[in-house]
Image (cartoon, rainbow, N blue to C red; front, top):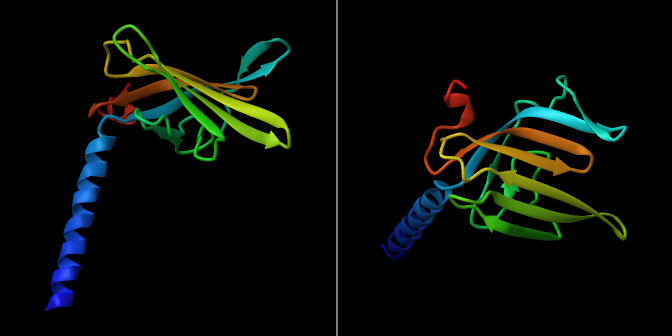
Length: 148
């Protein structure tokens, strides 16, 4: 009986944690890549054949953690939410990585939080790539669900 009570308490606690995590995630951004550009000869050249077009990722607005594919910053040495975004400012995250020994790599994500629309445009720079697309958040439908 005692083991049953302990097991029940553990399951209830796990359920509460899952509910809390789900509630915290409701305000996260969900994004989809719509454009891919490579930097070459002093300009960004669109690459419509890139396998990254259509990829999705998510952004934890509180911590700046980006997960889901190329833009992931889970293994960054440093991750900074430069601006949490507002009615006047974009949401901005800068991530710094150790690439090769003493060399550093950076990824920058900029989401137009100030836009009144449910779909907020983003651009991201990763190395010599520029990615563009749209994000939703705060309980809004994901980009593929809007039909736009």
